[in-house]
Image 1 (cartoon, rainbow, N blue to C red):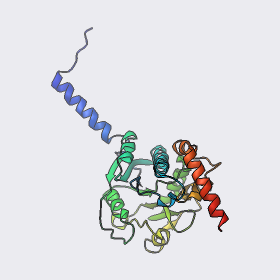
Image 2 (cartoon, one colour):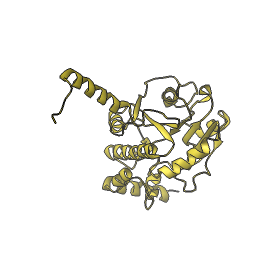
Image 3 (cartoon, rainbow, N blue to C red):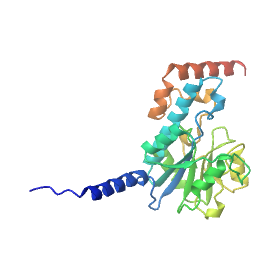
Image 4 (cartoon, rainbow, N blue to C red):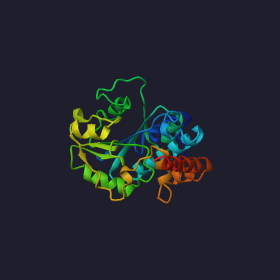
Length: 260
């Protein structure tokens, strides 16, 4: 039997449609589940507190690796229908495209109506008009896995607004909203945990994940050093094995311990 192929023009149209589907499919379409937004700063500006321990290339590699593991976790978590990354960094955007994740450009100089970090303006835009429950998960949680995130989401669905404080208690690693769109106001930045609680009326979910991974973000060389012996994502583990990261974090951690 002879095979029948579409005409050249029709074949081009089919290919164009297939490429378009590749761009928006996967975690670009909701089906009643959570929409998770992951903000990732430009790699040159991210994690400035690690600069005393890690050279710029090592810091960039670690930030990108942690973001990789967090995004993979979000995509793999049951109940998550859409994942978006907010960034202005081309390497992070390339990562998102490989994972078939939507990209929301981080605006430059955008006003933040919540009075906190300017990134909140981009987060607000990323969740605007999204049907169903929405959440923000920070990109520096290398120990986070799908079962842990699923546990947190199962608890968050019962509250109009909830959040996970970081391991220091002042920051926020995750924030969730299931209520009206007008009440979905991200308050990340300095003292974000207190602001989500007092200004937004969020319910803390710090006891939901017994492992603590949902709140254990990485901001300082001591945080990097504390990852030794813990189960981290594949990308983060590979970077932690590099001498520039391992030795830098160890040296800074020892120095910090000596001056206490």
